[in-house]
Image 1 (tube, rainbow, N blue to C red):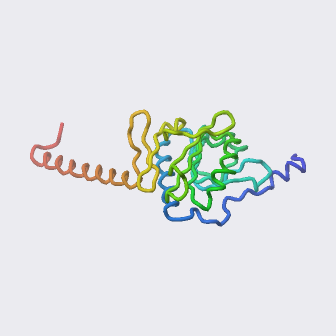
Image 2 (spheres, rainbow, N blue to C red):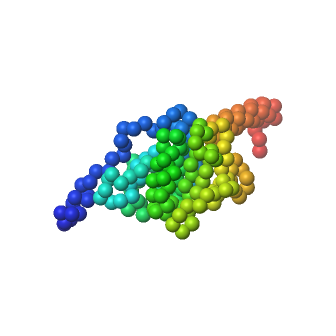
Length: 217
């Protein structure tokens, strides 16, 4: 039977939403959505999850101690979405966190959040300024060394195995192992449509062959 203290901990509510908008502007929302989907596709089949703008709770029993990273990648956990993420339940801290930053969030992003993520042990922290409003480098990464972050000067995410770059207010991703670009969702949809059209054309050609020569062996 749980003690009174345990019962209080169990009864604590950890909200999944605060009613605030997902992103400050359309550019910020678009950058988050595109990055989220590309990373999900990239990590399909691996023991990892990618979450976007969801509460990350880092202290059991203290629901106010939370942040909502724009995009976070967590390895060695079950794939799939969550309403929120509690470190003490999952047993893993995020490996990589992306913040799609702006002038209004710069102090928090470069101050409180960067310090918090370093203390938590987040291996890489990336800031992207889609409107190019305040970051000296529009895309800036940090890698944890000891207990502090050091700048990433080559835009390579070693933990993800990806090269990051900027393309039309979005983060573009290339694999480090073979240089292959991860397609944006729009590019992936176009590729699927082209493959479908090629399949239909092949079926037409095969039917013409059957009509003329009979069934294939």
